[in-house]
Image (cartoon, rainbow, N blue to C red; front, side, top):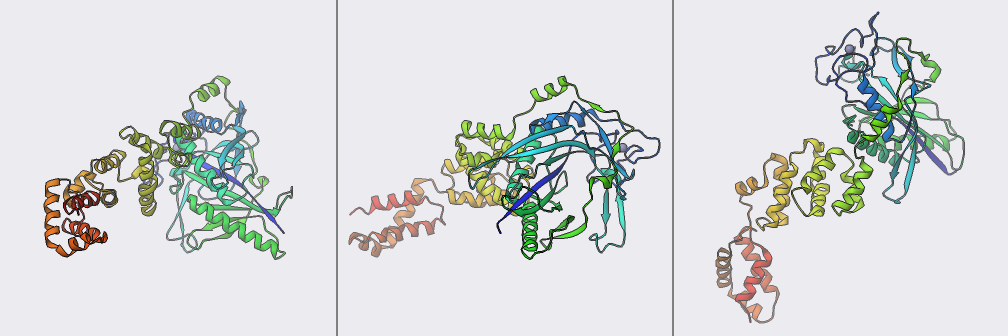
Length: 482
Ligand SMILES: [Zn+2]
């Protein structure tokens, strides 16, 4: 039987407002003393009342518009009830039947086939985040749970897609682009490891060409793009195996275990009615006037798709390069800054996509924390152009720059990896090599061209590789002309 994979995503993004969603507490909670960024409102104490932060609405409308959603001019808040220690009110203020944005889409391109796919966005709604449970060691072996309410009431936008993905890779490509979009919008920093962008996925498998959906499992706890792809692939394979053995997939929530590379059953999946949704009586229906929507639409910044097009035109680089360089806002900024200082824009993109991204990936460093600034990268390329160092030496200098954060010129000065460009100095060494190797000269005179390579090698040895080989070759040839 041929099967088809069906995946839908639910993505939560933390909106980068200064204050929380319904109170004045600061959203700057990472690394703060537990339970210090709290007040009666975000702790849900009796008698406290929520007031919506207007910036939250503005950021969410921006996000929904960038995802081509229709904005509901009237939407409303619901209470989503569930009992869990990180949720002091025992309900979360969210949106249910009337979300802020509906019916959008995002286009993704699949690099292997060159195909473009349109992924439906079902809805974009706003809700408050819960606190965090902290455990000694891992959750299964810890003797107790500690609770930190600093994250309570941080604003989130939830983006729900249609079940339009047909492979884990498509889901990964979508997420990379979504992250770049929210970064360009300035609404979320997109840091998956710190949890400011979180992704859950609904995965199911059905017979190819079937119209009905198979039973789905929800996969949670994926903290990187790589984890998303690995977890989804594991889940797809697990379900295919079950079905091929005549077993059934159970509707449940599964947890991605990064250390074991498997998904494990967490709990049976809740249905909407389990949450006892009811309208939030403390907040009026949310009214967004057309003027505000149009104002936000007019002021939308340049988004990655448009930026990519512009890169191919302004900097004359292939679409492939432009796609990668706009896959994060900061990476795009890095490239543009470098282009403002250096004319060969393709060489720049080669160095960034090659050496720089390789080292960043290896050391798990984000581009925003790159030890080599765009100015310093340009500094290195200028040294190559001036003939101070060769392309080969530049790779060594680059590695040292990455490790120390120093400028190329400083490293060259300190380590003497400088090319000998002083012709008189070189000629002296050439002459010495010629006089020391009469046998090679004889061989050359008898037609053995290879003898010349040996002499070049000797000069390189004397200069510890700091001479330009083509110059040495010409110089020797001139002097021992037959
Ligand atoms: Zn508060």
